[in-house]
Figure 1: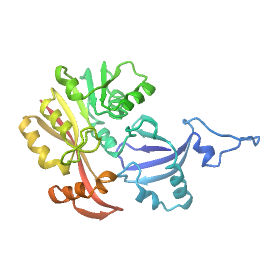
Figure 2: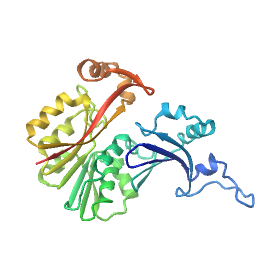
Figure 3: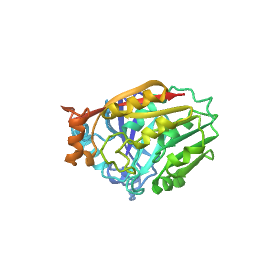
Figure 4: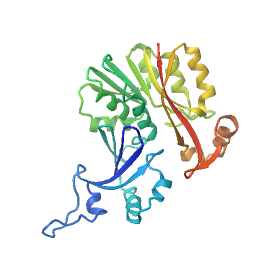
Length: 302
């Protein structure tokens, strides 16, 4: 299944690819009638378009596709292991479940890329993506920054490194399997990018990819030249004073309202109650989702 987005994230095109053409799209015989079991993932067939996506896979929008065959086809493709994400010339293939604890890019990843798509990176020689997962943001930047000679991706999940080892083809890139807070202590980068955990939670587990603010706070306090981060409005009352105290110049690059669709939040009454009572989370049902958050992509400069 390929999910292809335009530069402005105004629409999402869905394609069947590779083996899905034989398994789902009826292309299971050649011209002589011989059975075909699979195609390369470079071969694809368009299925449908989703307007104004706010999630990578939005069940509500998918269930409301008007064309019956397209709707059923999308439901079948969602069960397939391969996800291909395509944005502004960058294509990432990701086999779900193969790299445990590592996820293919989500809508906040693409929002991050939309926010930086017009930045001139030509003066930068090195960068690090902290908490990189599969490294979509770093890879997106190096397609635009021809003068970069060092690209570091850092994560504490060994499976993220395995994905890097299996897929990296750029000699400028390296992966650091280490806590970035320790790795960065004696190093300087022209740019740090991080799409960090941004949902506040008391007693957060620091190696959980969607809870806690420890990494975000550390980077704000300790970055050297430029830092680009993603901040949720659910953390504004914690993060904004820390940014102000850092003395950094702040620029809002982009923002988007997206559903809060994290199962471990929605099914944890204590955590959900905390976000409702202590933060900015309100019931606001529309477009199939009850809870929403506003994500801001901020650029901090020394």
